[in-house]
Image (cartoon, rainbow, N blue to C red; front, side):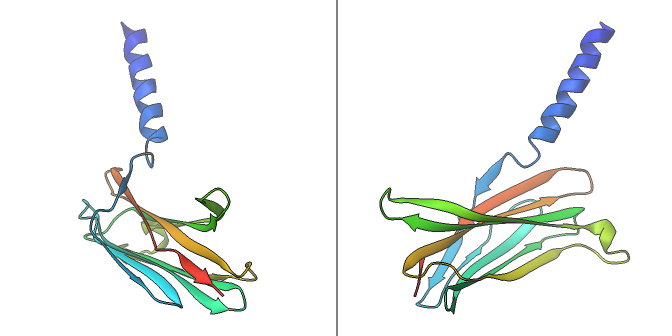
Amino acid sequence: MVWLVAMFVMQSQISAYAGEWAGISEIESINLFTNSKESRLVGNPKGRWISSIEARISDEGGGDIGVYADVLCHEAVQSIRIWIYLEHYNEENQIWETFDKQEFEWLAEDFPGQELTMATVSYNIPNQPRGQYYRLQGRFGATSFTNSSEAWRAFTDGLYIE
């Protein structure tokens, strides 16, 4: 009997750890804005902790691609993560392919005396081949102080980099 209980506890701990970010949901309420210089999405996942997200890809000229993302939470959380997948459109196979992935994490313990309710990331990816379509896949996650988590994902429209 003790062996069964120990096995159940071990299996529960392993499953909880492995599934922490496995259940990434699509955001249904998204507004997309695209022009010749940028493609931006603003989403409202209506999650337990995450209130809104934004992701933006921009043509910075000369093959440089600008990346921006932010997440805003309803209340203070233990951690926030943003994953950025830069994708280009493969005309031959007619699919989007990821060629750059960045992951960012903010922990409440790194901001003593403050509440962790939002996070922002912005950077450039230089010297990308021009004459192609690119888009961002943004994934946004938050973990509460009770170790419950949620994660959402969304895609910008394709942006032609001249």
